[in-house]
Structures are given as structure tokens and as C-alpha cells.
Image (cartoon, rainbow, N blue to C red):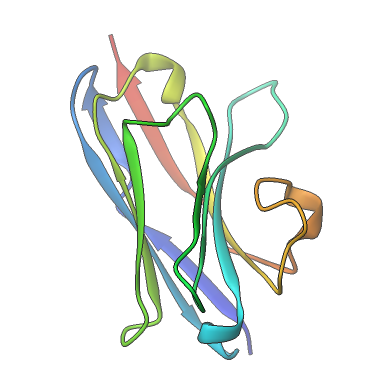
Length: 124
């Protein structure tokens, strides 16, 4: 059974940091790209970042470049999203997802498996 389990969300003040984790199981981790997406109330799901587990290529949305860092621990089948300098507009439910060779790494439509999400709230 494929599972993606996010953790690490919470409430933080603007300027603070959080690290999200995505623990994967049930598929060959090294063959997949893992993406982070977020969805705020009333808004569409937005691609935040992606990492290729095979070659380590990374991708970031312009809105988070320089503030967020994605990394992967293939031995633990886990992907992390380090979020620094958080802003109130980063408030959303954050999801991780897995895809085989996504053509558009930050497009949700290319992803096959999804986690349940973790809430991130940034207060001003």
C-alpha cells in the first residue's frame, strides 16, 4: 500500500521556521519525484517545490525561492521541506505527493500519490 505521511506543521510567527517531513512507503522511492504542494482556503493547490529522488534535481516556486529548501534522505525514504523566513501568505495545508518523471514538476496534475496534508499557520 502506497503511503505518504506528512508531519512538522504547526503555528509559527512571521519570520520563523518550520521543517516539514514526508515519509514514503509502498513504492520504489528512488524512482519517483516527490513534490510539496500547498492549498490555502479559497485558493487552488499550488506547487511549492519538488525533488527528484534519482538525481537530486530540485525545483521551487518563485514565491519560496531563497526561503525554502527541499532535501531527500533516500535511506529513510523521507523528503524534507525546510521553510525559513515564513510569511503569513505561506499559511496553507501542505501536501507531499509522488510522481514518476513529472513533465511539469510543480503541476499537481502529474502526481499519482498524495499524503493527507499538514497545516502550516504563520501569524503576523
